[in-house]
Amino acid sequence: MKMKKLFSGVAVLVTSLLSGMLLSVAAAAEPVAVDASMLINDAKTPGDVLTYGMGYDQKRYSPLAKVNRKTVAKLTPAWNLSLDHSANASVQPLVVDGMMYVTTHTSTVAIDALTGRQKWKTPVSLPQDVYASLCCGAQSRGAAVYGDKLFRTTVDARVMALDIKTGKLLWETKLADYKEGYAFVLAPLVANGVVMVGNSGGEFGTRGFLEGLDPQTGKSLWHVWTVPAPNEKHGDTWAEGIYLKGGAPTWITGSYDPDLDLVYWGTGNGGPWNANARGLGKDNLYSCSVLAIRPKTGELVWHYQFTPNDAYDYDGVNELVQSELKIDGQMRKVIMQANRNGYFYVIDRTNGQLLRANQFAKKLNWANGIDMKTGRPIESEMTKKVKATLESEDSHEVWPGAFGAKNWAPMAFDPKRNLAYVNTVNMGMRFKTTKPEYRRGTWYLGIEMGGFPAPEDGKRGALRALDPLTGKPKWSIELDTPYLSGVLATAGDLVFVGAMTGEFLALDSDTGKKLWSFQTGSGITSLPITWERNGEQYVTVVSGSANLYQAISGDPNLANVPPGSSVWTFKLNK
Ligand SMILES: [Ca+2]
Ligand SMILES: [Ca+2]
Image (cartoon, rainbow, N blue to C red; front, side, top):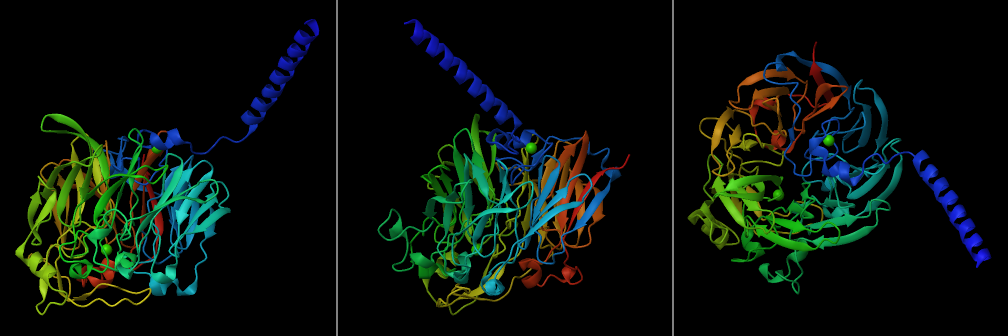
């Protein structure tokens, strides 16, 4: 008995010594740069910007208020850094522990956030022929961070993890064949410990999917097709033999509700554009939809389809912004989307119930409203005619056109005012339907494009402060050339936005009145952020435009806007 006690005493002593050693080893190791709780709290911690959307809810709203209506006149460049890059800049920078991370489609750059000095730059090596099968521009919308890693995607359909301190490549995973038209340009989403990404290339006869990856190894944890096979649920919503080219890409980063453990991810249009080719009267699930997904498993919990059997490139990928809104006397957890089809949707994010769907597009002729009982659009006579035949003799003119009433660049939502600040587009599209022919790695549309008419007043766009429940603007700034940047709103009663003619602007949140602007040297199509360090507020935007709108809109105001990307950071001049 005595011996036993003694031994067990020794054992306890040895164990506690060992665990003490283990503890001290753990304490000596470098802390994890970004953990799950930091990601969950990102919107409330303005010292860093860790997520696409400046918070899992993607409000793009900052509590910072030192730069405000009274002080913004003193906003001055703190630094500018060239990205040595002339393709389109559509990135949202991240700020982690005093370092800024910016991606282009050819590199990842780490920058000292206070001085603007480049710390490291890791190139993305790409095959020469990748540009031949890229539908919608060579670009990168940003990165994700988790642990000591930075995650990004590439236009040749890879996902990679870099060491956040050194930029060293830790793993890379090829998810698809770029020669078929697959590309990745979005910022990944890290949700519940899983790296989620989605594909671009829906216009090229690809089949959309979402992928969940292990952040440590890059191994696939799950893969979900957005176009079901014929023998799967909703497989019968497609014409026979078409699902492998059915589109429904997932090219914009979803938002995440950690309490419900659901990720909300939008899907693009079906392939080909020609709706008749995808089956007359067939809905083509899950194209033009929002999917609510469990990040650990990829399980589809609910879905809602915005545009069944879409005929006009009305991708449903636009950001799904979360807030709590009082609707019919009851507080509801919602997601909101200003859809390309011209309607502003408010959906209960716990169950997918449609709560509101009001027109925000200035001009719209494809539908006569959304039936709130069924959640389906009430199609106009023109849309019925467009869909009725595979090949049309007459030319059609639809509003909104393929740019949508809002393109992909995200809105901001001000929870104090319950207003969404949305860059809207007001352009139509002329086209004829034709018999689609598939050729690997190129456009698969089944339409003949006849141009993008501007409205009679010449105002191709507007920045609008929209009431999400009515779709009506509190104020609106009408523009000859639409803004195609992201929007940022702050508790300083300011809205920041960038023009494709190069001006970075600060507007009054209540009136839209211009309070400040700065010419950045190239057009702005990126996503501005604000952050603080040592008690000072900074505002960062990347300048550098060379986008699809410039290439095909025929907009005369952009003829003399040069490309060339650089990062601008501003602070108040004392
Ligand atoms: Ca933060
Ligand atoms: Ca599309």
